[in-house]
Image: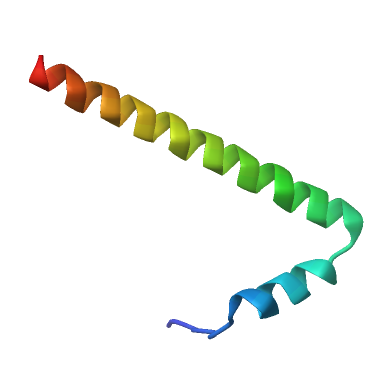
Length: 54
């Protein structure tokens, strides 16, 4: 079973603003960690792809 909710960016921000401060901090830390991991993965992928050209 799948549930879909159609929210725009402003609605999501509104929901986030309703969270307690601790939860906003937790969400911020989680998102920053995930972004760092993806950036590292992309950098590694670029390095591997560039190495194939040499």
